[in-house]
Length: 145
Image 1 (cartoon, rainbow, N blue to C red):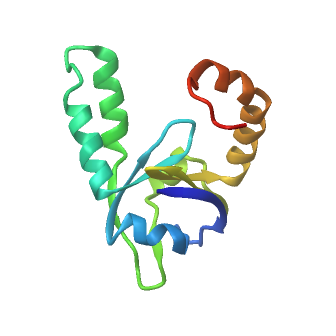
Image 2: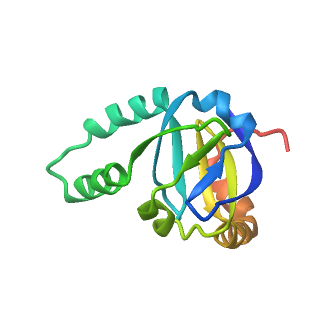
């Protein structure tokens, strides 16, 4: 399981260190793709395979299903860590997520997300303003709060 928030930087070649806590869970090879909310999603191969199977079951006759599958898979790339624990983020993905120098890497249960620091701060501020409302709508069990 991935959790936590880590501040990192991207170097001039588009490389970024994956937090040590996430490396073991991601394994030697993993998949990065365009995520929702202008961030990147990073999946261990096992999670990616499960997600791929779910996507295959979407009805290809539905325009919205085709659009989502295209969006998700067209941006996907297989990644490997270098000896320093870095990955190279392709230019198209850096542009999509507005990644420049400062980034935030967060653990979200079964995946890792990579955010531009500015986008994360904006998203986090807006989400924290309405998190109680959201919880009332989607959480149907007691979190113990």
